[in-house]
Image (cartoon, rainbow, N blue to C red):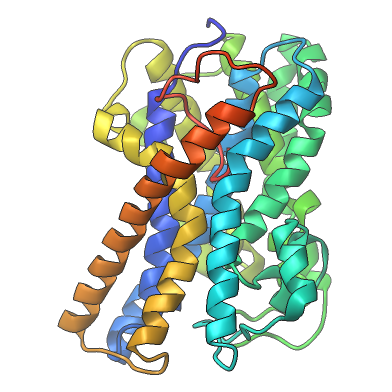
Length: 385
């Protein structure tokens, strides 16, 4: 398959992943609904956001490997990544800090304190919050940015990882992929050995356990590397054709099994491999000219703004919740109206931020010189990529 082939379906997939995170935060973390039966009914959605983030990590590695040009200086790559993730991250951080100042005595919907102090604020701005086993720090200010902390670590290593992947003989790629898939599925297990007070009945793990299996950047590196090797396999013509039935069954099985597995698996590990299969399936369809629903123009446009949606929706949601009354809950009809309104507000804000902040700054500053901007349908792997 040729270098530079566009993969519009992966851009559309980014929207579905970001929307999954948004839906989880709206229906569970924002606690709009007073009906305890409805709250119980939507709890199975809880692993959805973690699974989507895992998919973003795989997608990030895949797309960066797919679009990588041999010989590109590491500095040029890092500069492009900085201007891709930086502007929207700064907007989200400013929004979250402003809200924290205005509502300093309040708490996040998940019970964590908003007022984390200037030290936490600086760590969050510099995207270092994933490196300390401190849950309040991991989720401080703009909570979703913890995953961008992981992405920064991945970007730092990418020039080394892609060089190593390119040196692998094609015949060994399948074995390396298997090792990485097993590593992704196994890495949550050490968290079971970490003791400490559990966070609650819904999360029967200590804060240190959650950090180790979810927030800690090196623990998520295997997902990113899995995406890189998957792209190499597809480029080399060694990726098997996976029937759609198998794709659907693997995703359904992961969703069905997650509630019955040890708690660390709720944080996305089980969904990583099925989503990897889906990513490769969509990429192959695009490369062969068989793009489907995810490559439609409306979904591509939404996918291009998916990082902005991911990184900006949390401070917006907190602001709305505070204005409505942080302890106030609503009936089902009113709650559904509020959830819909918040979703539309978040999506509209993301489209504006992408159009007037992200894209202009990336086109202006991501390269030392000023070549033609990237095609609008060019996918970007993770929420940040």
